[in-house]
Image 1 (spheres, rainbow, N blue to C red):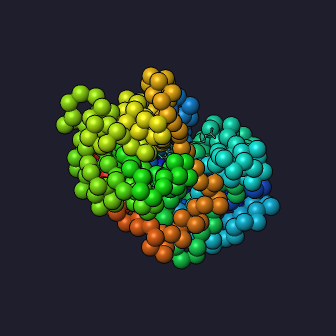
Image 2: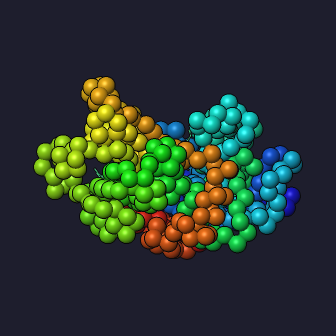
Image 3: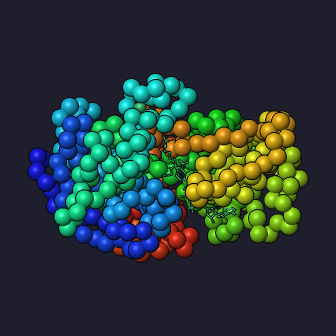
Length: 373
Ligand code: NAD
Ligand code: DAO
Ligand code: ZN
């Protein structure tokens, strides 16, 4: 506490080049900040998206990573909600409890540090990392690809002391996102008929949520048939490979599945799939939720008549969960067995193999890879 820590981190020096494991200097936490030791971190597409140079706002050098779990090392002035030794999960959507958004029950998008977080900076517009004498940017307020990171108290939640950290890191992004989109955004009711497009961690978590609330039919759609077995394990009742469908996918789904679905979820990030997901929502009442993040600059399209005739298009970020209130509860669900995180973990690897892990991610050969720091 109180001094700079030298530790290992995977630094992204520039877009489109592999990460380098470096010794970095991590400053002590300032006012309202916490220095945590990351013990487990998983990889998510947003890390890859930024590393691939696809995020026009991406800044370098940067320490990526945002799906993690660990323990508090030290706290800065004024921090009251955590203490050294506490188990924690960093949160890329903070919860300040004060902003207009936090005070509105209709949203989870706390805006307290939106501008600086997007620029890779702390609210005072400086950074807490140095490598080879150079400043290194933060990422999504988390930067979990480092043994130690400095995060804001409002971007951190305390979880049960004996939580399985090697699993609950997944609650920092993908699993919470899909599960929450069902429970909070769509509010899927028992007996509903649901379609899920994209069967990565997010889509599988949608299936888990749909099963949990008692959906009567869950149709899982993916262009990679290798994903179907796990989808069925989570509760999919039917599977569809769009590559085996002739003609428009939405038309096929509407005809085969009784006029379409009560709820559909796009978990790919493809604007054509978003259209299909909207248009196979049932006429009169179907709701389609966009979760996937499309490439920058892309637009979605449909005929306005699709909405005039009773379909609703929605979107969901981090499953609509107000982060600090909700993630500790999700951790309890994982601990008491209500939610099983094991099937989401396709690989466990040491932190040093992070570039191999990115290769697997790019090849679509994993659900979630958990790296042990
Ligand atoms: P993933 O890559 O593991 O899964 C995507 C799946 O989509 C793969 O199984 C792939 O085979 C399938 N797919 C690709 N093209 C398809 C097509 N044309 N039709 C049907 N299936 C297709 O990704 P993930 O980690 O599960 O994330 C899914 C999406 O959600 C990404 O866009 C990610 O950025 C986004 N995401 C959003 C939030 C949020 O808060 N909104 C949070 C996390 C992730
Ligand atoms: O408040 O303007 C805002 C942005 C909040 C962040 C929403 C992120 C949703 C998707 C992120 C991709 C997954 C890590
Ligand atoms: Zn807020």
